[in-house]
Length: 623
Image (cartoon, rainbow, N blue to C red; front, side, top):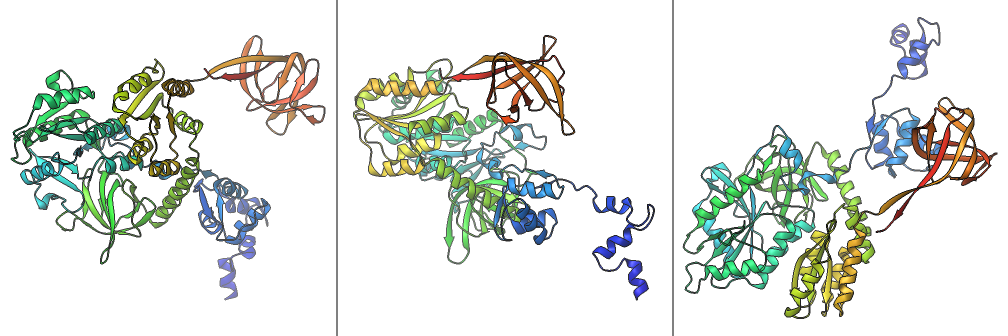
């Protein structure tokens, strides 16, 4: 037994290493050391991880990982969480490279399906358009959807009409269209406010006998803010008071110019009650969808958007999901918002079980551990661990966004707009009287110039209400009131969403505020100011690669906070930031004329005696 144990190398530990070290090179030779320290491939670390999870990723024991943290001055137990920066230092102490993963919150479900990666993907195929029906109450939205469903229902065995999950799929000439049955434009915008651009086409329903009404105007504003094509369905053409020309003229007053008036908006006269014009409407929708070239890759992991959800007493959490791209299958591990689970079952609107669902397909999903909100992202993940990481990331980012939105000052609003890189200032306007709407809107829009556009999302009369805040929240706009008040509920919602509300009694003050905000979106002027020059007198080696330049300032001064050009024989050979500046043994912030010192420039290690150093700084001024 002893001999056999010796041949196997004995128990793991020192004996094993000592036996393996015998051989060429003698006892303790270098070959075994090289084998024990074979280079590890870099590992991906999450933004946050417990000490135990970090040890598992690094393939180290919990004790070794805790010791490494203690050497870094971090006292943490196995179940405590450490940030990426600390975990990276622990990995470096074990000579393991790390890869910083991107936050998974950038899921494609938050982007309109016409996204570039889908358009350029070789595996992408044409997908059905997703259509939302909007309009004034009692103008026939539900009747129109019923007429569409009743006339052109997809056969149940081929995917079915999804009557019970808030979305419907119909067939026209072998091509499918997906309709989302939302209760109104508020729900439409609520999904946008949650970060989900669900709709490809908006159908605006107007009653021919009633014309454009207040909720019609709100629906127009919300559809325009979503930046999706609008098709007008002029309903109730069978009504005795139907007046097509009046409806078209009223639309033109609100910048919806139909084709018969020389515009580019498709308008289709229909009678939802009699079923007239339904075929023409579906053909128009297919034509607009064809122009958009909507595509998705069915072979990737499924991503989608939650339409609605509820808790069923017998089935548990039930979520209605619209698949945006990829394919979702029964048994997949999924994350919806901040909830996760494994799909136990998927059903169509008839209650029939389906095994998989492709792009633009609405499904009902069972198996989540909670109820996600409408507009939440839905992602298929590889395993339960990846699902936990994604949920943790979303919770952390949601908390961060909440903290950032706590401030409702105009400066905070402008900071968010600037971070988005937009050159467009979006405004929601409310006035105390109907007669002042046009005057205020024109005055605000005239602030636009070649570099910054001021766009009015909505202009109406009355007190500022919660619907105005919702529209502003979905579009990162600011709300401006002229000679009007703010409802208490709107004020509370604005504080929660971080939306700035400004009210004015003098129109010139309103215009001045808009002009000031527009100026804030202009790129600031950047000007280089030369501070001084210095000659390199001597070069000192610092470590294996770095060098220190011993210099004398010949004119002006050099600032530690500035930048430096290295000029050799009249040519600039390097330009970078100053990482260290010393006079004698002291670290200093600047070196003035005739002073000597040593300095290091970030990334440059090839100084030569006689080099000329030019110190400068970039001054940024607001335009």
